[in-house]
Image 1 (tube, helix red, strand yellow):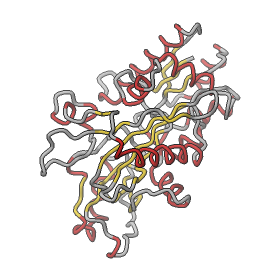
Image 2 (cartoon, one colour; image 1 turned 90 degrees about the vertical axis):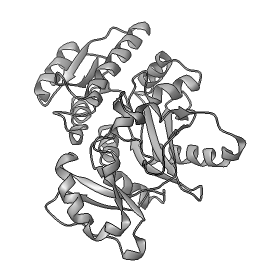
Image 3 (cartoon, helix red, strand yellow; image 1 turned 180 degrees about the horizontal axis):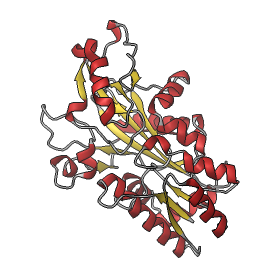
Length: 332
């Protein structure tokens, strides 16, 4: 059974994308010899529970990214499946909760000694955040949603100069309602951006070929960020000028080894399973920093995970088969 979040008619491109994923996964499962059903999940968990009980599937392929338009509810379906004793694909409810809340994820990374940029927050506008000592102020911040992904709310206005740090609380309070209700400020690393996809395999997780996002033709006044337009607005300049590349020279060998090791460290630290993607920035000193961990990255054929799968010499059908085979490793 393929379960995805219910999508409102005319929803934003990032919401509609889950339907593309569901179509791809359903077709792949059919080619792999499985009988499939497909359901949309909303906040009526009693309804989806009844459908699952009636169908009695061997496995639920979990594609839920949000419920009722809120990313903070992403863990509800896997939590329900755990309570039902129903096997499902991907990471556990706990891992999805911990990685989807970017503050919780960064806190765990920091405690484990995994480099992640300094941050301020979370802020929901009702209480002030503790600001860092002035000596630790970065030259620039980037304001992000705590719960929402897909670069929602990320554009040039998300960048805040460090000199404005004393006013950061006011900025966060103003933006929180537009960023899912909770936001934070993270030190902006003005360097190279990498995405490393990880896929479970018979011998454990395998890091797929690393991808770097290239900011083609960006002027000095254009922020080098993969914002919402770069991901979802096909009419925008950023969409067509932020390609990913997989070819690197020998001078990047050490850096790529570090990124691979850190991606696996994140996999272990959050007890991930099935598939995942870790996003990095690399600063001017060639030091990598973990930005985010996505425990259920987009599986659309035009997305980064699919590109990494292809670069590894696999098909999407083979990737789906591995995700299905891995489901019993951590929660069944």
